[in-house]
Length: 507
Image (cartoon, rainbow, N blue to C red):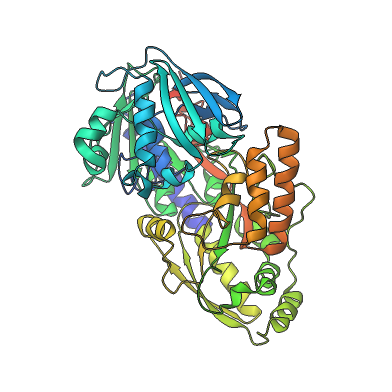
């Protein structure tokens, strides 16, 4: 029924496209996605999409990551590890901020020093940079970074540190800067769309990586995935992010093309075990039981149209450190019941799960199916929706109230390296929710190993141990579906979002 209705709307909407196009500026790209970042233009409060979708257009880091995980020049053109704990970064000359100020080494020092300050420590990016001990300007175009201990992936880590214009940051403060951000990126903010729900950015011709063709970006706040599809069909947007697979199938070839972009993300439910009570999830048998209880192959086939795969671990095959020897927990409800009985829960128990939804991959339906499967083995689930701002506040503080578990992706995208989710599913996270002390020395050792081959094997061993510890209910690899108007070409993602500056209009 849904497909017949959708198809009928599709035919009508496509007929209107030629009418609506004349009203759209020729070089404007309209993107249908989720809301603006909670802190607007303050780029330190989150890491990765959806927030970085906006920030990556305004700001730059010292490095950039390709979709293949390679580290590429950003505001730094080269770097070397001169001593075990010292890195030297050579900066890109001639870069200007959107307010006309010149970029130099003092700016890098100012940003990192701020993130290491008491005020800066509250932001998520600061937590990712705890490895840095100090930073100093060697000369206007050279920065020396000293780490607390040897760090094999510092150039990868630094891609998430967006360099803000220090003068504007100091004058306006985090909140004021959020309203009027100043960076070096290819687009400059014009309107946060607080009343219109439409973030507007215009091309900054003075950027070192200027937009090839697009002169204006409009990020339209459309929280519901079905509404994004309808907006695309009605020519209200040109590109939709995070649609459900069935929508992509119906739209593909009808004036649009659907494309799945590589995404080093695994959808999961994180288990809270760092808590004062004797919660069932503290028992590894219970955590394993929940992994056996969910029919993930059924989810991939029936809900996700076989567009992805069941997760075997908290990493995708494209990610550095992925362990190819690990297999997904098979669907085995009888084994789940047996493990629950051994753990002292023959009749099951109740669990509260907070979840972020409407991010794509039919996530709402996936979570509902998960809850149904858990119910079949006696685990009663209360699913509670949360906003991104509320979820982020809980994640940063570690205060989840009475929630036993919460949706959390194993997101290797910012570094294209499994160490990032490994670290936040560990005792090393500031507001930790899962902690196995035996893993800590292994994590530290992997960070210090400069030999790439040896380090990969160390990470694979950690992933094998985590597979048995089951700190999460792993569901599926989270692919990024983009549905794009045929008027656009060269639309591709990178670790922090979409490379809007590379989009071109078809002749």
